[in-house]
Length: 449
Image 1 (cartoon, rainbow, N blue to C red):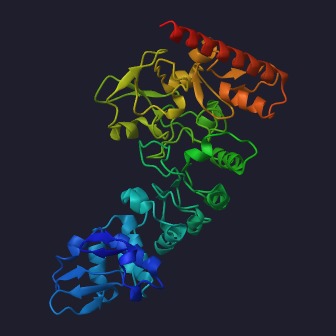
Image 2 (cartoon, rainbow, N blue to C red):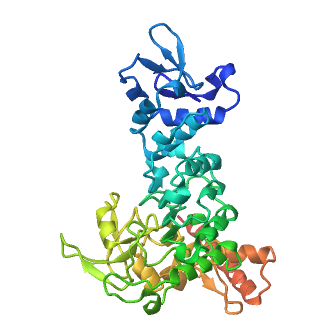
Image 3 (cartoon, helix red, strand yellow):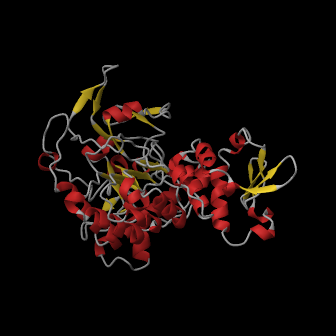
């Protein structure tokens, strides 16, 4: 891939004499440079136009060629200042591969690095090597406080190794999505617990030197609670680390860890793997009981609440500053009669029963009043009304083994011999008979129309 006429062109068009070694670095500089191609043409030097990924640029006058890396570092640093931070770092990494001192381009003020600041398709192409080189170039272990891997779906996490044992990093967002974006990815992410967890362990193992305040994990890691997994074991270690210091609510001054029944990290049930009490934006702490009236209205807000769309926890101040722009269509919660945004509601809190008449419950009623039940196998949720009144489609608990499963999962487990439980086999038989009766009734009605 190279730059031609200000746009991106496929790598197959690169001349063979320049497409050999270093093609990966060449691609990096092209990906970075396409942000400011139009600006380069306005530099007060002989007019240059991007020609190809060999770092050669052509004078429009006599047709001679020069290397981009031969340009003065000051000029390159000035041009790169118009780039988003991740693109500037990628540009510097590419120049380093050409033995160019890029320290002026990198600069020294690297407090935060958010890959959501560049195009989604560009971030999706980055590899672990790219992430590693960027973190090395900015000396992340000694500088970086906040890291967000938005849209970096092509990495395993090995590229985060430069952060190992950091005593500077305060926040790492591994969710791969931005604020108020659904955590459900269109494509399969490759972020690996085996690669990431040892790096996180090396950070929290620094004890009193560690300043880590907030972690956001990918939804895929949190979908199913598995107490024997490496991820669950890390959650326990991270929870111990967070609980080792006194955490006080900024409103009521109560000791959160002592006064609240929920741990610092959600270790079970709904929102498994999420961090409680800490706002993902300002990283301030609020208990789950405190409320406050908004300054510009009479509305009362919880000081700490979870966005139903991105499943991040925000404090009232940050959620009002970043008001979700999609809340145009709402529906009334049948339990408390509060309005619920249909666009923001989490997919895991929509009843999986298609005949549920489209009822939507708010998070408060789901959590506090037990209005939802989740299948312990597929993790699909069913509302309490369906579970109590519709034996065929709801989640039911077995009186013998206590396992709560939906119809499909219980039938599949019994059919494949995975459940050695008389109660489950009895329920599966009743489900099959009820399904047969329903289909028979449906056929009878159609024949007499």
